[in-house]
Image (cartoon, rainbow, N blue to C red; front, side, top):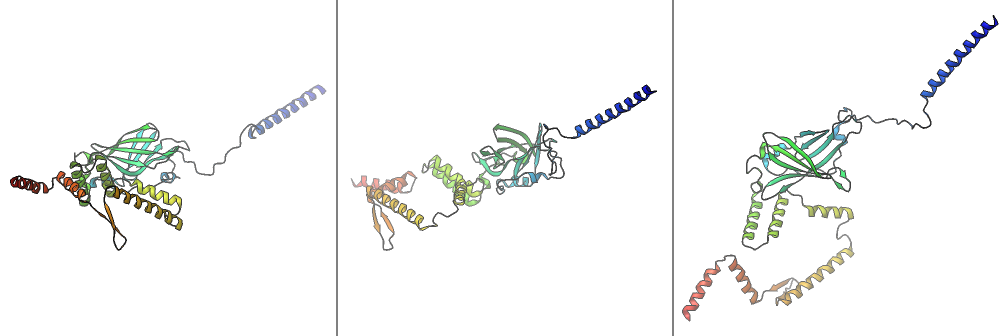
Length: 328
């Protein structure tokens, strides 16, 4: 009797011990161990790649600069406000002419990449032809910004045909469109206003007459394209950045004015010495303005230069020479 009772008691104690062990095991599984890191509480909504409806794609892209104004051939202006996509591997590229070009990772990762590869900046012009659109000022890439060169090619419809990365953070895109299939559709000269066309004609004539060098001709064309809005004026941009970084104008103090006046005075003295070396007299008028007097020898030089330009004086010189021969 005692044996049976003891056996029953031992069985109950064993069951209680097993139950207690199970409870301890469950509690240990719920509690974090000493080696486990603290769990991060996600307060912001998960992006889930590009398919997250809670976060607009535009809100994740922060452009650094504003796009340049729409420019170039008028028939290409109809592309403004439109965007064209191209998917390659796990990336989607979106090109919006005269605005920007972006890259988006096609992934459901919470931190899928979306970035700006360039913002509309200027045209690339070669031999009187618009050959490419430059998208600059994209997202940072080390010490520089990403930029993209968009090549225009004839195609049956508007589409992105090819995307590559020739060098780090430098992208090349081919955009096909029927708007450039005509052989004259990308010529620069017809798009210029009349005054700029006249300046180009004068520069062309001056180059033909060897009055300016090839370098001077190209510099003139660059200024014409900048005036038309096809190229960005880098000098003006650098000047604005310098003045902005300094936080003050060039002549905002008396000391800076004195320094500039001293430089101008030294330059005037240098020019006067140079004129004296060439026997060119300088007279001072009553209003303190200086007038350079040209010596007779310089007049002869000027006449010779006019002769080289095909001046009508050649005919009178020929008549005078014939008259001299007759007198002899």
